[in-house]
Image 1 (tube, rainbow, N blue to C red):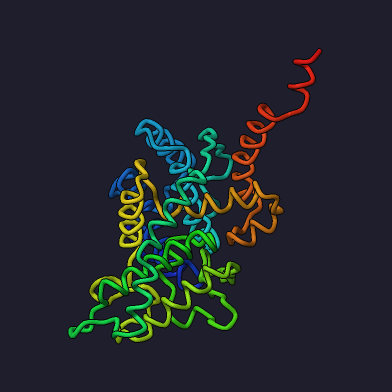
Image 2 (image 1 turned 120 degrees about the vertical axis):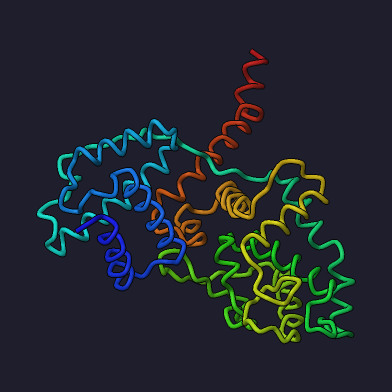
Amino acid sequence: MKLKQAKAEFLSGYFSTHRRTEKTQTAYDSDLCQFQAFAGPARTLESLNGSIVEEWAAHLRNQNYAPASMRRKMAALKVFCAYWVRKGTLAQSPFWRVKLSFGRVEQLPRTLTVSEIRALLAEARKNYVLAASSAQTTNPEDCNGRPKPAYRVLRNSALVDLLFATGVRVGEVAKLDLGDYLVKESVFKIHGKGGRDRLAFAVDKNTRQIQQTHVTARMHIASPTGALFLNASGNRLSTQGIAAIISHLCQNAGIERRVTPHMLRHTVATLLLRNGADVRIVQEFLGHSSIATTQRYTYISKDHLIGVLEKRHPSLSLRAAL
């Protein structure tokens, strides 16, 4: 069987029995297409062996791929091979007896400073009171059924507040529907990665008020979609749209560096740990399947701790007096 056919059958069969997001399926397709191009059009599934795996790994390294990218591509190929071993087409995986090492690069999450997150929240809420008042007295959509500017002010306030208050991923926010917000409980039903759903709680009084005001205005817009957050055309706000809103607000707030929606998630996680939250609570809060993922944030908290100790530890003043 040629690799092209094997890849098509794998994508059809594997993802019909394994619950994965569309983004994950696209990544598998892309990585396997890349391997297929490297292996050549004449390569068959049965001819795969350890040598071709090692050659592809060397090729990726020569192309200066990051270790994380190489690991992901190899993981996709490994799952592909394991699938055909289970099917009985391959007697054994070509990864058998192959040991690959791509090095370890520890990338600490990029976060906002306290002053930056305060400035961003303030910018998002700048015209909130005026927009909330307008939404209570006038229809939030225009004659063409599109959201008015006042609604978009409420949306931006709710969007930024939600990202920081709950630490949800930008993709999770984009997928939220009106029915995913339980108004009385102030709880969001989050559809997470790998089919892992969880609840996100709005614990701050101001956050609950902002979310409630936005939802009330949103319910008065007759959109063809059930999305919680709408764009200017009245359709579901995309992840790119959310990123553009965050970027624009940061620019207006005087934050000069590039800020992504994911940085708000990193920021709240870091501040939770800095304020004494247990790492397992933060794990549940973020929806991480592994505690190891959450522990990346402890490095930042340790840096902060060491910095404070270097400035404030009593031994410093005692030593000066000796």
